[in-house]
Structures are given as structure tokens and as C-alpha cells.
Amino acid sequence: MEREQALKMVKIQLTEHRYQHTLGVMETAISLARKYGVDEKKAELAAIFHDYAKFRPKDEMKEIIVSQGMPKDLLEYNSELWHAPVGAYLAEAEAEISDKEVLDAIRFHTSGRRGMTKLEKVIYLADYIEPGRHFPGVEEVRNLAKINLEEALIKAVQNTIMFLMKRNQAIYPETFHTYNDLILNKED
Image (cartoon, rainbow, N blue to C red; front, side, top):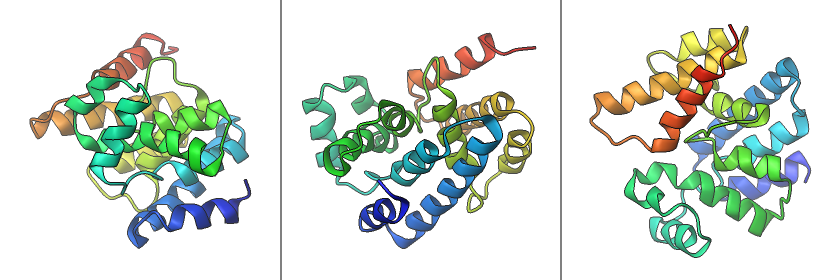
């Protein structure tokens, strides 16, 4: 799918603010992909569709999680997590994207997972550091992303966990597994 066709399809699903965010994620993902030897076209497509389901009704997302046999424990955690796996499903079903790597990058851009591919890391990080993001700690992660993908990702996941803890919010177990996997497999 070409960029313009993908953007057109995604734009009608998003608010203008979220569409601008998507454009920032796309440009950031392409830049990170170029820097870290990831297929730029796959990074572009995953970035464009990463929030495809963001504004779908919660009932629709819940139905898809159940009917498609996605992990049921998703329903026990913040519904902000749902749009990633549901988005991967809808990108395949509605946009006919069949590339498993692209779909997994969409699927895991909120929670991460053990054994993330470089493409998944690029999309997770691009979503976190795109130029429209402004929150404590984002500049540090942006700077790390310029020199070390793994270190930047570790810091982003760490910041996310700390943010949720400070707000007394439950943390999806796969996010802890992501952090532990990154730490345990870190090259010194």
C-alpha cells in the first residue's frame, strides 16, 4: 500500500490532532529505521496504521478482543492498551495488510513484548518520541534514540512504568516482561 492511500484510509479514523501525531510518528519511524537498519517502507506503513483503532468504540474493541481470541487479560487493564492489538487486526481485515512484521509492530506498540524485533522497537520508540510529544523525560529518550536504540527503548519503558505507578494505575504484565527482557539481553 502506498503512503498516500494509507494516510487517506487512516485520516478518516482519527481526530486532526491524532492524525498530526501519526504524521510525526511516521517521519520519526522512517528516520529511526534508516539509522538502525530497518526496512523503511515497513516502518512507514506500521507507523501510519499504529493508531488506526484508537477511536473505535470500546464495545467494538472489546468484541474484537474476545472474538479474535486475543489475550483476555487485556480487558482487565486500561482500555488504552486495546487499540494496538485491535488496530493490527483491523489493519489486516480492512486495509488488507498481510505483512506479519508490520502487523506485530502495530500490535505491540503500546505494551511491547519479550523478544521485540527491531521494527517493533522503532515503532514503539517513534510513537513515544515523535516531535509533538511533550512530557517529562521525552527529551532524554529523544537524545538516547540518536545514539542507541536499546537504551532509548529501556528508558521509554522505564518512564512508562514509573508514570503508571505514580498514578496508581495497573501495569500490563507484558510491559514488565518487555522491560526485563530488554535489561536481561542488554549488551554491555
